[in-house]
Image: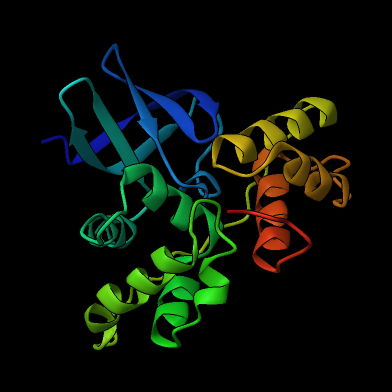
Length: 206
């Protein structure tokens, strides 16, 4: 099991990044909550990781904090929730907001995340509620990211990242267009677009 990576970021294309560890490039999928905290390409990063082994592939998932990884692992235990959906949940809302939605049985908030229908939201509430009875610090705070990218590239990359996370292309494009993205980094555009998605800004997701 690969539980931790420390190396240099050589590529970022949400939701995937490549980390060079002593000459070996590890391809890692990460939720946007982690992407918001990543340093620039070429800088060193430490990620808490979880390896998913399937018959046809090995997938490595990376997280900014051990608490975020712990929540990811708890999500994998929920009936019908796989790694891709768990990443989508952590991208669609913060860990604190997810815990609050589960405790409040707020299935409406959960169904705003792409791929989460009513039945899945109800399962998340039922199966996760008992695990959140005790107050635990699993919040993931997205730090401000200060990066400078060409605006057009940042916007296009943001739309592509949202589509990769499961949002419909027309919704992704519409949310990004609503943001004043001049001079804004890709990760910040994605963050604001996800906030629009979480607010239920007219998107129709399944």
